[in-house]
Image: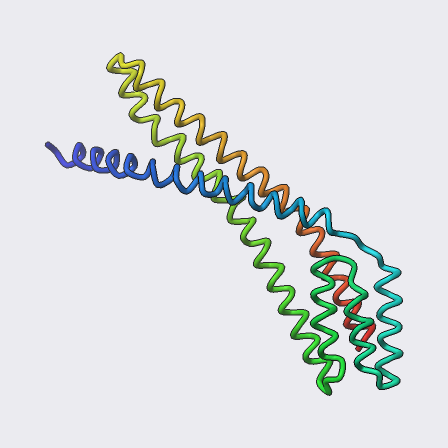
Length: 205
């Protein structure tokens, strides 16, 4: 056996060994995508935005802070958020109202929420990039055995490998497409939330 034949057989064996890990990961990504879709629908149903409520809450909070009523100011600010993420932020920010270093601590809190949002979007970005790649792997790897089966006249081997190839393509595109749509929508949501958070910090500070 010459070197070129050995290299080709080694590559064929290694690529074939990657098929089942790729399929298992792809199935896990499909489950992950369906979970993300469920969370997206749940978040969508709970999202509302009332700029008037937020503005009034910030103005009332500012007046209460100036009057020294920090407890009441904290309750007012915490209740001014109109969606889960913004309510979480205003609740955390309310705890800092009586801090002498409010401007520094509020800026740090805002940065922490930016990182939290970025992490959420990065997880979706992994899905959008990796799921189609795994689908492509699951498509290309069975083509070798399928072509060998075709050349040998083995229709059963050809058909079974083509079924695997087409199925992984569909699953990869499905997971990637759903995750991409969710990512775009959530990015728009979170940009609006970040804008509202910055507004709250400036109004209260």
